[in-house]
Image (cartoon, rainbow, N blue to C red):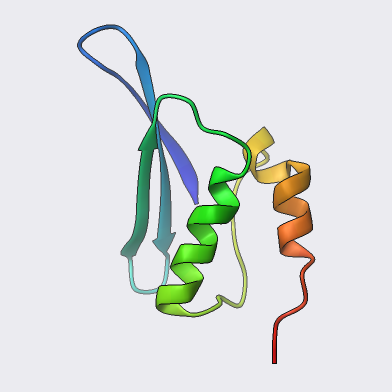
Length: 81
């Protein structure tokens, strides 16, 4: 998962959270917004897991959104049986 950044015609910046399965190269999520809250990443990942199942691992850089307390807390939740 990573962020794509682009500019709009009115000068505002837009960020797009992209979640890609590197094995199949399928794009599992594209979530655009001009202001991405800290809970956005976990909400999008919950939606991806609900649709495609839980991945064995996640790969991202160390952006604040990926290292935030909500994200770290989400990652520590045990898998339900």
